[in-house]
Length: 447
Ligand SMILES: [Fe+2]
Image (cartoon, rainbow, N blue to C red):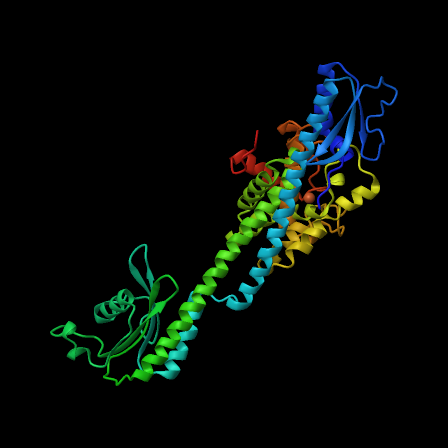
């Protein structure tokens, strides 16, 4: 059960700011009490007036005491904010639940499909066919709906060539009718009489998934062979294997995409906990990818940078609101708790094999080039390159946006800060890349 206390609500800078403005406009003094009866505004010596409850749903979470009717308006205003806050928290919880659920499916999918892609599945199957059925050209033709062409994967025949002649004609029939064909002498088949033939015997079966035929599997030969019903039965079994495995692999790919989307939503939900950081994830991602482009990293490394930037603060889901959103100065103990978020991030990501290689980028984004960062006091090139990139992008965005505890720096001053701290806080190579990106327009600055 998610709880919101009135004390927590009033501690939020944007709430206390709005309340001060409201009271100034009403020209009144009030006192606010928590559910435990302790004053939260410290104005206990003011004139008592009427007492109005602050309600979260049907539950009373505190009181506003002051002159009517203004105190009633204040109580209603605080009730409204408390309910909004609850909505936000419920959203965060729900996303976390969704994440857990998808993670389970994801792991199952991974076990079922392994890391096979459709080409590996095709080659495995064709090798099996070659062991079991006589022939020369063992092939799978995947049909592409978009360009209406076959993609030919072949053992024994040409791998790159588009199918043509009788091979293509039979494959099209099998694909569209969904029925296997066994032809031991193409010359005796009326469809091919009078045509010059480059093959004599062929068997072919459709690859059927639940919703459609995705291609065919077949064997052909330039010599006359006597394929039997038993051969066709084996070919049908192999085709069933290919189709279902590919379908599972596709499901797994979809799941992976859903998973990444959920992770992104999760990152955004964490952002929504603090209205001051709206858009932070998106900007850190854009800056980080631009730096990686200036550094001319290979495409797969750029993708790792992108994912690490999206997820760099995912571990903040494990830090309590009262600390994360506190507007005043943090105690040493609270700061230690905040410093745990890169480690919490690692905890979350290590359950997802496909995201293992971005863990260093997430775990070490608060390390400093001079070794004075956290969590492991790594220095210089010991720090993962992705983490060094995200560190610059993250800090620059933090400097140039308003936060609950400080106003934004002008862009020029923030760029100066990067220059000044190159070699201490930041890797000079990354700072130079960022500055170069700003000059050349590869880095697009917000504001
Ligand atoms: Fe962080």
